[in-house]
Amino acid sequence: MRFLILLITALLVRFTPLRRGMRPDLAVSWASYCARLAERRPGWRALVCLLLPLLPLELAFWMLADVAYGFFVLTLGVLVLLFGLGGNELLHAFGRRFEQAWARGDQAAAALIAENDLGLQASDDQTLLMQVRGRLLREALSGYFVPVLWFLLLGPLGALGYRLLRLFVDRLASDEQSYAGSLVHAMEWLPARLLAASFALVGHFDQVLAALRGVWSDWDQSVEPLLVRAADAALTGEASAEKNQTILAPTRALLVRAMLAWAVPVALLALLG
Image 1 (cartoon, rainbow, N blue to C red):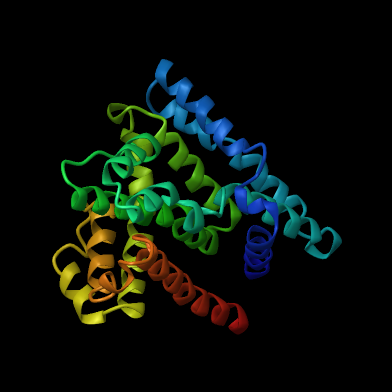
Image 2 (cartoon, rainbow, N blue to C red):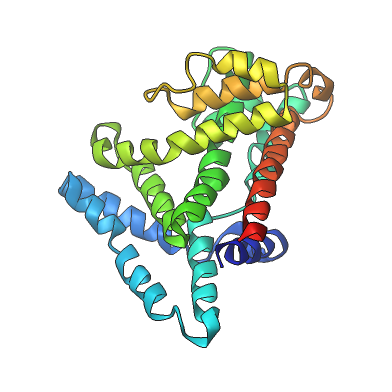
């Protein structure tokens, strides 16, 4: 059932307007409300409020389990997973304006776009480019890989619960993220390592392993520097070949190959039952 839910959702976000996300996006609205609540009552209460909608959804899955041969469970599962994934245009739309300015050789415009659109600033062009690539990797992790892994482990509510936490943390001040921030870090720790391992499989294996030596199992290592190191190692010798095209194209291609590396074992597990 989970594989069928994932397959239908993937087809919907690939070939329908749902690739831009659900409208209205109730997950964003609820996370914003809970973030405002956390400003007045900081602590675990806002976190409990954030995850409260998962309880009636779990009851709905349980009650509909044997109704109409699981059709309603399938429908509800697809709907919940769509909210858990959000939009699916990341690989195509992220940083396009930045890339266009960079391709024109207008680094000043590219820096301004990065600051306005992505909130990134750097003292030199190469540092800015590294930051933009790191943000793309970070957004791909939180937008695709983490929700999919927790969907496979916990079902649609796992994907939705993670997205609610991610949206909630993004709306909090840094000194108010203790509880939710720790949960998000815990939920991203394993998927980030699996994604880095995927880069090794679809890129330069030895270089990725060497780059991650000493940080692979570090609990305190944040995911963005880890993924940047792994991607840089996996793309050794490829970035220069794409220099005359779009500056983020090699990173996008690496992420697509990593998605395929994830899709194969998921399909095999579904076939094996």
